Length: 344
Length: 289
Image (cartoon, rainbow over all chains, first blue to last red):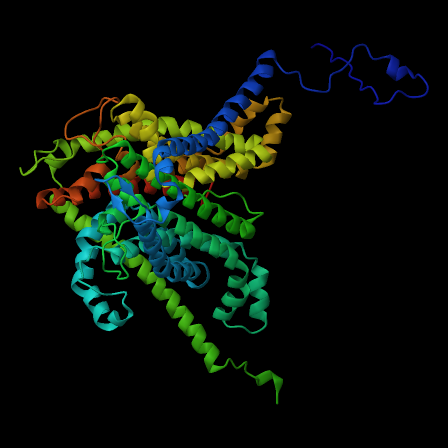
């Protein structure tokens, strides 16, 4: 066996006197591992590769913005800002205003929030805090499953099951008992704003519930224990020890749900009735920003018509961007310090 | 009074509030689960009735004729999803690796933010953008443009889940590999990515399940097709599109087929998620699903 070469490490700073041990070093010993030539290039190449992927994500978003702006240029020039406050939508004479769609989007989304928030918060708190342990994962799986149902299937169900149900039972009942509010007037079609709100509510419950679960879990145990030790009941513990700390994050979840509801297309298109009208009654059909694009895009004749639809897309993009950024900020402020989590 | 026997009294009002809150939450849970059960119930009940062999093997008959199926839609969807995955998954994993391994800085924050923005862009907006980029320049609808739209939608989900999973791989594993003299990229590819395979697969499957049911981005890209077409350059049928058109059609026969299509679609998606849960429960990253 070959004798191992004698390795001596040179001291970082030369000693004042020359000593034998230093002089005996035959050749310099490299402390850094020797990188084979291939690896020296492979590292930067690999980094460049993943950097390109990451940059393309950025580029995609920029591309979407550029495309939306350039496609809607014609309409931007023709109508300016008044596009968003005028309520004429007349493809024949080429007069376009998006207000009915903005109204429809806002009303259907707010309706969805009013229905979904208590339910989502309830189910999330029930799963994290109250539910018997064996049931916990089943329940959260079921709520997740609700998020997995494609929007077209919600729409299908809305048309053939929910709308007849609303028409036959719920809407007459609402009209009879709450007709005085003016919100439940007119013929009960089934399809309309109310149906859209309910479908949207079912669709955003899992989003709000999963964020709520996440931020509630992020509240330290000691908070609960401290309140519990003061003699609080379970509900008081939840209210004082948990919700008060998690409310910012829950708010973020709600806004994230709102973002989803604003951009939801197919299910809403199928049940809202698609008529650009502004009506106080929730029974009346409406139209949303997303569903007008879905419905009229392929039939749009004329560049101005297409451009107006693209401008609606641009508006939708900007609104959802603001809403989602706000939501992220709120969720981050609570879960900061925990590992990053994709919100899918 | 003897302290030993003193009972902690909770006032009636507080007990009432506690009970009401508990009941309220349980009711909320019940109310949320109800639509799920009802929707699945209807899908199976209506879908099974309309589902038969010819539905899976034939293309649509002309309107008004009975029979026919969605075979072209099923195949079209499969092709679209295949190409979409080929675009979305490598991009997503690549940028996820960037975020986890090189992205603990300002550039990483920018990419993270844009990925979240992309995640929040309504699918209809992605559809119309791809229409402007590909359909307008090609001058016709195509299967490929539909796949690009869905591929773009997969990217942010895969990116963020890959990052999340890679960050869960212990730093010591990386250090051990570097200590053996392995170069940086080999550490990432052969050690970190290898360790995290199960978790990354989970993220991919979730992204897949998410785009599999998308209809809106396909409306102005893949467009739909009544006939057989497997060419990436031609308009293609897709299952969700066909469900949409059939559901909104005035013909009862088509409505019936829409339910069958919906059943096939939901089986595909729930099947994917089932695999995800199986992988996640066995693999490294529990709870990632």
